[in-house]
Length: 399
Image (cartoon, rainbow, N blue to C red; front, side, top):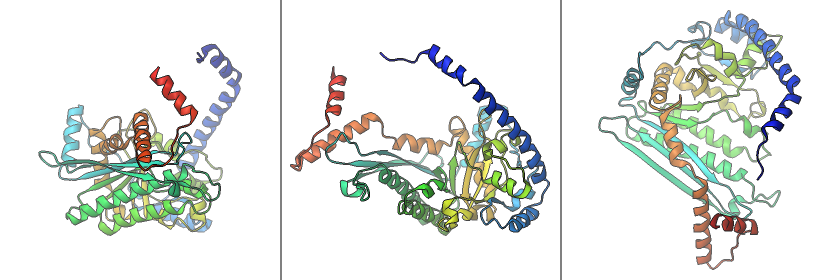
Protein backbone atom coordinates (compact mmCIF):
# COMPACT_ATOMS: atom_id res chain seq x y z
CA UNK A 1 0.00 0.00 0.00
CA UNK A 2 1.36 3.44 -0.95
CA UNK A 3 2.14 5.73 1.96
CA UNK A 4 3.89 8.99 2.68
CA UNK A 5 7.59 8.52 3.37
CA UNK A 6 8.77 10.86 6.14
CA UNK A 7 12.39 10.46 5.00
CA UNK A 8 11.64 11.39 1.40
CA UNK A 9 9.43 14.32 2.43
CA UNK A 10 12.16 15.76 4.68
CA UNK A 11 14.75 15.20 1.96
CA UNK A 12 12.60 16.99 -0.63
CA UNK A 13 12.08 19.90 1.75
CA UNK A 14 15.78 20.10 2.50
CA UNK A 15 16.59 20.51 -1.20
CA UNK A 16 14.36 23.64 -1.24
CA UNK A 17 15.73 25.17 1.97
CA UNK A 18 17.24 28.16 0.16
CA UNK A 19 13.99 29.06 -1.60
CA UNK A 20 12.12 29.09 1.73
CA UNK A 21 14.85 31.27 3.24
CA UNK A 22 14.51 33.72 0.34
CA UNK A 23 10.76 33.83 0.88
CA UNK A 24 11.25 34.68 4.56
CA UNK A 25 13.68 37.45 3.65
CA UNK A 26 11.18 38.90 1.17
CA UNK A 27 8.52 38.92 3.91
CA UNK A 28 10.83 40.84 6.25
CA UNK A 29 11.52 43.43 3.55
CA UNK A 30 7.78 43.78 2.91
CA UNK A 31 7.19 44.27 6.64
CA UNK A 32 9.69 47.13 6.75
CA UNK A 33 8.09 48.72 3.68
CA UNK A 34 4.65 48.25 5.21
CA UNK A 35 5.63 50.25 8.30
CA UNK A 36 7.09 53.01 6.15
CA UNK A 37 4.05 53.42 3.90
CA UNK A 38 1.52 53.03 6.74
CA UNK A 39 3.18 55.85 8.66
CA UNK A 40 2.60 58.16 5.68
CA UNK A 41 -0.92 56.88 5.10
CA UNK A 42 -2.11 57.18 8.71
CA UNK A 43 -0.87 60.76 8.88
CA UNK A 44 -3.34 61.73 6.16
CA UNK A 45 -6.91 63.01 6.58
CA UNK A 46 -9.60 61.28 4.52
CA UNK A 47 -10.03 64.45 2.45
CA UNK A 48 -6.32 64.46 1.59
CA UNK A 49 -6.50 60.81 0.55
CA UNK A 50 -9.51 61.49 -1.68
CA UNK A 51 -7.69 64.44 -3.27
CA UNK A 52 -4.57 62.40 -3.94
CA UNK A 53 -6.62 59.63 -5.49
CA UNK A 54 -8.23 62.20 -7.79
CA UNK A 55 -4.84 63.60 -8.71
CA UNK A 56 -3.55 60.13 -9.52
CA UNK A 57 -6.27 59.72 -12.13
CA UNK A 58 -6.94 56.22 -10.82
CA UNK A 59 -10.67 55.52 -11.12
CA UNK A 60 -10.35 52.23 -9.26
CA UNK A 61 -7.72 52.77 -6.53
CA UNK A 62 -8.67 49.61 -4.61
CA UNK A 63 -10.55 51.37 -1.83
CA UNK A 64 -11.75 54.80 -0.70
CA UNK A 65 -12.05 56.09 2.88
CA UNK A 66 -15.39 56.70 4.58
CA UNK A 67 -15.87 59.33 7.34
CA UNK A 68 -14.98 56.57 9.83
CA UNK A 69 -11.37 56.86 8.69
CA UNK A 70 -10.83 60.07 10.66
CA UNK A 71 -12.45 58.55 13.74
CA UNK A 72 -10.03 55.61 13.86
CA UNK A 73 -6.69 56.00 15.61
CA UNK A 74 -3.94 54.14 13.76
CA UNK A 75 -6.64 52.51 11.60
CA UNK A 76 -8.19 50.79 14.62
CA UNK A 77 -11.65 51.22 16.13
CA UNK A 78 -11.29 49.33 19.43
CA UNK A 79 -14.01 47.06 20.77
CA UNK A 80 -14.94 48.54 24.14
CA UNK A 81 -16.63 45.60 25.88
CA UNK A 82 -14.38 43.30 27.89
CA UNK A 83 -15.34 40.25 29.95
CA UNK A 84 -13.86 38.03 32.61
CA UNK A 85 -15.36 34.79 31.32
CA UNK A 86 -17.06 33.20 28.33
CA UNK A 87 -20.31 33.23 30.30
CA UNK A 88 -20.15 37.04 30.51
CA UNK A 89 -19.40 37.25 26.79
CA UNK A 90 -22.34 34.99 25.99
CA UNK A 91 -24.70 37.10 28.12
CA UNK A 92 -23.54 40.19 26.21
CA UNK A 93 -24.06 38.41 22.88
CA UNK A 94 -27.56 37.23 23.72
CA UNK A 95 -28.52 40.74 24.86
CA UNK A 96 -27.23 42.23 21.59
CA UNK A 97 -29.03 39.62 19.48
CA UNK A 98 -32.33 39.58 21.38
CA UNK A 99 -35.23 40.64 19.19
CA UNK A 100 -33.01 40.85 16.09
CA UNK A 101 -33.72 38.05 13.61
CA UNK A 102 -30.72 36.65 11.77
CA UNK A 103 -30.67 34.55 8.61
CA UNK A 104 -27.95 32.82 6.63
CA UNK A 105 -27.90 30.85 3.39
CA UNK A 106 -25.39 28.34 2.09
CA UNK A 107 -25.25 25.87 -0.74
CA UNK A 108 -23.84 22.52 -1.80
CA UNK A 109 -23.80 20.70 -5.09
CA UNK A 110 -23.44 17.42 -6.93
CA UNK A 111 -21.50 18.01 -10.16
CA UNK A 112 -22.09 16.03 -13.34
CA UNK A 113 -20.30 12.68 -13.29
CA UNK A 114 -18.73 10.94 -16.28
CA UNK A 115 -19.54 7.66 -14.54
CA UNK A 116 -23.22 8.12 -15.47
CA UNK A 117 -24.48 7.61 -19.00
CA UNK A 118 -26.94 10.52 -18.61
CA UNK A 119 -25.50 13.87 -17.45
CA UNK A 120 -27.17 15.17 -14.30
CA UNK A 121 -26.25 17.53 -11.49
CA UNK A 122 -27.95 18.98 -8.46
CA UNK A 123 -27.79 22.00 -6.18
CA UNK A 124 -29.03 22.16 -2.61
CA UNK A 125 -29.56 25.49 -0.88
CA UNK A 126 -30.03 25.50 2.89
CA UNK A 127 -31.06 28.35 5.13
CA UNK A 128 -31.14 28.98 8.85
CA UNK A 129 -33.34 31.59 10.47
CA UNK A 130 -33.36 32.55 14.16
CA UNK A 131 -35.75 35.25 15.35
CA UNK A 132 -33.90 35.54 18.70
CA UNK A 133 -37.10 35.76 20.71
CA UNK A 134 -38.01 34.31 24.09
CA UNK A 135 -39.00 30.68 23.81
CA UNK A 136 -37.12 30.32 20.55
CA UNK A 137 -38.36 30.59 16.99
CA UNK A 138 -36.21 28.91 14.36
CA UNK A 139 -36.45 27.78 10.78
CA UNK A 140 -34.26 25.29 8.93
CA UNK A 141 -35.07 24.28 5.39
CA UNK A 142 -33.58 23.36 2.02
CA UNK A 143 -34.31 23.88 -1.64
CA UNK A 144 -33.18 21.13 -4.03
CA UNK A 145 -32.84 21.63 -7.76
CA UNK A 146 -31.82 19.13 -10.45
CA UNK A 147 -29.95 20.25 -13.57
CA UNK A 148 -30.69 18.30 -16.77
CA UNK A 149 -28.41 17.69 -19.78
CA UNK A 150 -29.95 20.69 -21.59
CA UNK A 151 -29.08 22.93 -18.62
CA UNK A 152 -25.56 21.53 -18.26
CA UNK A 153 -24.37 21.30 -21.85
CA UNK A 154 -21.60 23.60 -23.07
CA UNK A 155 -22.24 24.62 -26.66
CA UNK A 156 -18.57 25.51 -27.20
CA UNK A 157 -17.06 22.23 -26.07
CA UNK A 158 -20.03 19.90 -26.29
CA UNK A 159 -19.10 18.76 -22.79
CA UNK A 160 -20.90 18.98 -19.42
CA UNK A 161 -18.55 21.10 -17.26
CA UNK A 162 -18.92 22.06 -13.62
CA UNK A 163 -19.12 25.81 -14.21
CA UNK A 164 -22.86 25.78 -14.84
CA UNK A 165 -23.46 24.00 -11.52
CA UNK A 166 -21.19 26.44 -9.67
CA UNK A 167 -22.98 29.39 -11.20
CA UNK A 168 -26.44 28.00 -10.48
CA UNK A 169 -25.52 27.41 -6.84
CA UNK A 170 -24.30 31.00 -6.47
CA UNK A 171 -27.42 32.39 -8.10
CA UNK A 172 -29.75 30.31 -5.93
CA UNK A 173 -27.97 31.38 -2.75
CA UNK A 174 -28.52 35.02 -3.71
CA UNK A 175 -32.14 34.35 -4.74
CA UNK A 176 -32.90 32.72 -1.40
CA UNK A 177 -31.40 35.62 0.54
CA UNK A 178 -33.51 38.06 -1.48
CA UNK A 179 -36.61 35.96 -0.70
CA UNK A 180 -35.79 36.06 3.02
CA UNK A 181 -35.25 39.83 2.91
CA UNK A 182 -38.59 40.30 1.19
CA UNK A 183 -40.17 38.18 3.87
CA UNK A 184 -38.63 40.26 6.66
CA UNK A 185 -39.84 43.44 4.97
CA UNK A 186 -43.37 42.07 4.66
CA UNK A 187 -43.32 41.25 8.39
CA UNK A 188 -42.34 44.86 9.17
CA UNK A 189 -39.00 43.92 10.75
CA UNK A 190 -36.59 44.86 7.96
CA UNK A 191 -34.27 47.12 10.00
CA UNK A 192 -34.16 44.74 12.96
CA UNK A 193 -32.85 41.81 10.94
CA UNK A 194 -29.45 40.73 9.67
CA UNK A 195 -28.80 38.51 6.66
CA UNK A 196 -25.47 36.72 6.14
CA UNK A 197 -23.90 35.90 2.79
CA UNK A 198 -21.04 33.43 3.14
CA UNK A 199 -18.48 35.08 0.87
CA UNK A 200 -17.68 38.32 -0.91
CA UNK A 201 -19.88 40.57 -3.03
CA UNK A 202 -16.74 41.55 -4.95
CA UNK A 203 -16.67 38.75 -7.51
CA UNK A 204 -13.32 39.30 -9.23
CA UNK A 205 -13.20 35.63 -10.18
CA UNK A 206 -16.02 36.23 -12.67
CA UNK A 207 -13.74 38.59 -14.58
CA UNK A 208 -11.49 35.65 -15.45
CA UNK A 209 -14.31 33.71 -17.11
CA UNK A 210 -14.97 33.26 -20.79
CA UNK A 211 -17.37 35.75 -22.39
CA UNK A 212 -20.97 35.15 -21.39
CA UNK A 213 -20.26 33.24 -18.19
CA UNK A 214 -19.98 36.17 -15.77
CA UNK A 215 -23.47 37.61 -16.31
CA UNK A 216 -25.24 35.20 -13.97
CA UNK A 217 -22.93 36.15 -11.10
CA UNK A 218 -23.15 39.87 -11.84
CA UNK A 219 -26.95 39.86 -12.00
CA UNK A 220 -27.18 37.86 -8.76
CA UNK A 221 -25.00 40.27 -6.77
CA UNK A 222 -26.72 43.34 -8.21
CA UNK A 223 -30.09 41.87 -7.23
CA UNK A 224 -28.87 41.02 -3.73
CA UNK A 225 -27.38 44.46 -3.00
CA UNK A 226 -30.35 46.17 -4.61
CA UNK A 227 -32.84 44.25 -2.47
CA UNK A 228 -30.94 45.11 0.70
CA UNK A 229 -31.08 48.83 -0.08
CA UNK A 230 -34.65 48.81 -1.42
CA UNK A 231 -36.02 46.86 1.54
CA UNK A 232 -33.65 48.38 4.15
CA UNK A 233 -32.55 44.94 5.33
CA UNK A 234 -28.95 44.89 6.66
CA UNK A 235 -26.74 42.41 4.83
CA UNK A 236 -23.22 41.16 5.65
CA UNK A 237 -20.81 39.31 3.41
CA UNK A 238 -18.45 37.31 5.63
CA UNK A 239 -14.96 36.35 4.40
CA UNK A 240 -13.02 34.42 7.00
CA UNK A 241 -9.71 34.29 5.09
CA UNK A 242 -9.41 37.10 2.58
CA UNK A 243 -6.61 37.46 0.05
CA UNK A 244 -7.86 40.89 -1.07
CA UNK A 245 -5.47 43.81 -1.57
CA UNK A 246 -7.90 46.71 -1.86
CA UNK A 247 -6.51 48.85 0.98
CA UNK A 248 -2.95 47.89 0.08
CA UNK A 249 -3.58 49.31 -3.40
CA UNK A 250 -5.01 52.50 -1.88
CA UNK A 251 -1.96 52.91 0.36
CA UNK A 252 0.34 52.31 -2.59
CA UNK A 253 -1.58 54.88 -4.65
CA UNK A 254 -1.40 57.72 -2.12
CA UNK A 255 1.75 56.88 -0.10
CA UNK A 256 4.02 55.11 -2.60
CA UNK A 257 6.36 54.52 -4.27
CA UNK A 258 7.85 52.09 -3.33
CA UNK A 259 4.91 49.68 -3.32
CA UNK A 260 3.78 46.82 -1.09
CA UNK A 261 2.59 43.43 -2.31
CA UNK A 262 0.95 42.27 0.94
CA UNK A 263 -2.70 41.32 1.42
CA UNK A 264 -5.05 43.50 3.45
CA UNK A 265 -5.27 40.86 6.17
CA UNK A 266 -1.51 40.90 6.67
CA UNK A 267 -1.50 44.70 6.50
CA UNK A 268 -4.02 45.07 9.33
CA UNK A 269 -2.99 42.10 11.45
CA UNK A 270 -0.66 44.04 13.80
CA UNK A 271 -3.04 47.01 14.00
CA UNK A 272 -5.94 45.12 15.62
CA UNK A 273 -4.52 43.88 18.93
CA UNK A 274 -7.65 42.70 20.76
CA UNK A 275 -10.67 40.56 19.93
CA UNK A 276 -13.45 42.63 18.36
CA UNK A 277 -11.15 45.45 17.25
CA UNK A 278 -11.84 46.54 13.69
CA UNK A 279 -10.67 48.92 11.01
CA UNK A 280 -12.82 51.81 9.78
CA UNK A 281 -15.09 50.98 6.89
CA UNK A 282 -13.74 51.62 3.40
CA UNK A 283 -15.67 51.80 0.14
CA UNK A 284 -14.57 49.13 -2.29
CA UNK A 285 -12.99 50.34 -5.52
CA UNK A 286 -11.44 47.04 -6.64
CA UNK A 287 -9.30 47.35 -9.74
CA UNK A 288 -9.97 44.18 -11.73
CA UNK A 289 -11.12 43.18 -15.22
CA UNK A 290 -14.79 43.61 -14.26
CA UNK A 291 -14.42 47.17 -12.97
CA UNK A 292 -12.10 48.13 -15.82
CA UNK A 293 -14.67 46.96 -18.36
CA UNK A 294 -17.53 48.86 -16.69
CA UNK A 295 -19.32 45.69 -15.56
CA UNK A 296 -18.84 46.17 -11.81
CA UNK A 297 -20.30 49.57 -11.04
CA UNK A 298 -21.78 48.03 -7.86
CA UNK A 299 -18.32 47.62 -6.30
CA UNK A 300 -18.51 51.17 -4.95
CA UNK A 301 -21.87 50.32 -3.37
CA UNK A 302 -20.02 47.92 -1.06
CA UNK A 303 -18.26 48.98 2.15
CA UNK A 304 -15.88 46.71 4.03
CA UNK A 305 -13.81 46.52 7.18
CA UNK A 306 -11.45 44.01 8.79
CA UNK A 307 -12.17 42.67 12.26
CA UNK A 308 -10.26 40.60 14.80
CA UNK A 309 -12.21 37.41 15.50
CA UNK A 310 -9.33 35.12 16.47
CA UNK A 311 -5.84 35.75 17.82
CA UNK A 312 -4.14 32.98 15.82
CA UNK A 313 -5.05 34.13 12.31
CA UNK A 314 -5.40 37.38 10.33
CA UNK A 315 -8.57 39.45 10.74
CA UNK A 316 -11.71 38.54 8.82
CA UNK A 317 -13.29 40.79 6.20
CA UNK A 318 -16.86 42.06 6.64
CA UNK A 319 -18.71 43.55 3.69
CA UNK A 320 -21.95 45.50 3.87
CA UNK A 321 -23.99 47.51 1.37
CA UNK A 322 -22.85 51.13 1.34
CA UNK A 323 -26.20 52.36 2.67
CA UNK A 324 -25.60 50.58 6.00
CA UNK A 325 -22.56 52.75 6.72
CA UNK A 326 -24.10 55.94 5.34
CA UNK A 327 -27.16 55.43 7.58
CA UNK A 328 -24.90 55.17 10.62
CA UNK A 329 -25.69 51.49 11.26
CA UNK A 330 -22.13 50.22 11.00
CA UNK A 331 -21.38 49.84 14.72
CA UNK A 332 -24.72 48.16 15.41
CA UNK A 333 -24.31 45.62 12.60
CA UNK A 334 -20.73 44.84 13.65
CA UNK A 335 -21.95 44.24 17.21
CA UNK A 336 -24.50 41.73 15.94
CA UNK A 337 -21.83 39.95 13.90
CA UNK A 338 -19.69 39.73 17.04
CA UNK A 339 -22.66 38.37 18.95
CA UNK A 340 -23.14 35.64 16.35
CA UNK A 341 -19.43 34.78 16.54
CA UNK A 342 -19.60 34.42 20.35
CA UNK A 343 -22.61 32.15 20.07
CA UNK A 344 -20.80 30.20 17.35
CA UNK A 345 -17.45 28.47 17.57
CA UNK A 346 -13.94 29.49 16.61
CA UNK A 347 -14.76 33.06 15.62
CA UNK A 348 -17.35 32.10 13.01
CA UNK A 349 -20.96 33.36 12.91
CA UNK A 350 -23.32 30.70 14.25
CA UNK A 351 -25.95 31.40 11.60
CA UNK A 352 -23.49 30.66 8.77
CA UNK A 353 -22.27 27.50 10.51
CA UNK A 354 -25.87 26.35 10.84
CA UNK A 355 -26.74 27.08 7.21
CA UNK A 356 -23.65 25.16 6.07
CA UNK A 357 -24.62 22.13 8.19
CA UNK A 358 -28.12 22.19 6.70
CA UNK A 359 -26.99 22.55 3.08
CA UNK A 360 -23.97 20.25 2.93
CA UNK A 361 -24.17 17.20 0.67
CA UNK A 362 -21.80 14.42 1.72
CA UNK A 363 -20.48 11.54 -0.36
CA UNK A 364 -23.22 9.27 0.99
CA UNK A 365 -25.82 11.83 -0.13
CA UNK A 366 -24.28 11.90 -3.59
CA UNK A 367 -24.41 8.12 -3.85
CA UNK A 368 -28.02 8.07 -2.69
CA UNK A 369 -28.89 10.71 -5.30
CA UNK A 370 -27.37 8.55 -8.04
CA UNK A 371 -29.40 5.55 -6.85
CA UNK A 372 -32.62 7.61 -6.87
CA UNK A 373 -31.74 9.07 -10.26
CA UNK A 374 -31.13 5.61 -11.71
CA UNK A 375 -34.46 4.39 -10.33
CA UNK A 376 -36.24 7.42 -11.80
CA UNK A 377 -34.65 6.98 -15.25
CA UNK A 378 -35.50 3.28 -15.35
CA UNK A 379 -39.12 4.12 -14.46
CA UNK A 380 -39.17 6.38 -17.51
CA UNK A 381 -38.01 3.47 -19.66
CA UNK A 382 -34.78 5.23 -20.64
CA UNK A 383 -31.43 3.43 -21.06
CA UNK A 384 -28.98 4.00 -18.22
CA UNK A 385 -25.66 2.52 -17.15
CA UNK A 386 -22.73 3.18 -14.83
CA UNK A 387 -19.11 3.18 -15.95
CA UNK A 388 -16.95 0.13 -15.28
CA UNK A 389 -14.94 2.25 -12.85
CA UNK A 390 -18.04 3.02 -10.82
CA UNK A 391 -19.12 -0.62 -10.82
CA UNK A 392 -15.63 -1.61 -9.65
CA UNK A 393 -15.85 0.86 -6.78
CA UNK A 394 -19.22 -0.55 -5.70
CA UNK A 395 -17.84 -4.11 -5.76
CA UNK A 396 -14.82 -3.12 -3.66
CA UNK A 397 -17.07 -1.42 -1.11
CA UNK A 398 -19.30 -4.47 -0.90
CA UNK A 399 -16.35 -6.85 -0.49
